[in-house]
Image 1 (cartoon, rainbow, N blue to C red):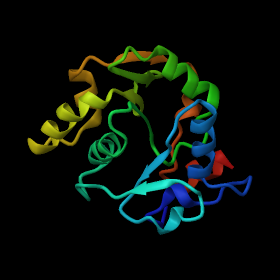
Image 2 (cartoon, helix red, strand yellow; image 1 turned 90 degrees about the horizontal axis):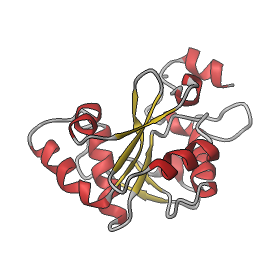
Image 3 (tube, rainbow, N blue to C red; image 1 turned 135 degrees about the vertical axis):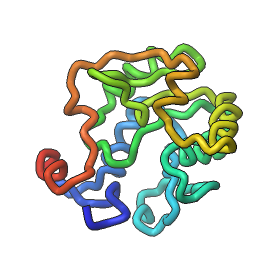
Image 4 (tube, one colour; image 1 turned 90 degrees about the vertical axis):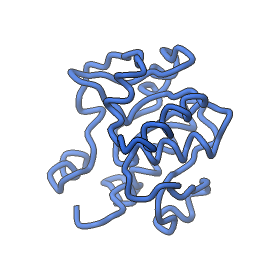
Length: 169
């Protein structure tokens, strides 16, 4: 995308993906909403807490670890910052299906960066990172994540390419 801050790109309605997601998370009853990022400047002015990755450069699983530690003992509703189509009702559905441990959105495949994670799973997340395992998908699979079925793949489109951005506009 030509920027390290995809979640701060302005979309057709003038809001960023992060702003859309923060609104959806608040609407679904999630509080506090915390952004995990190595650099907080793109998110200033949003009125949200920004937490630095405790293990920069290790990918999304390290971000999940940082979020779990930041809001413990609360569970975390994990969403990738570049999923602008994820809405309040989608998040409510995911939260309602949470079994008290781990629930993950599924379309035709797991959407590992759309999940509800119990605070005590930080032990498993940290242990995986300590072993050099960075894959969220594999860890959620190993932990027996409850699949929450969604039929619309477009809900989980992320902004990886200019073409993805054009589809979201």
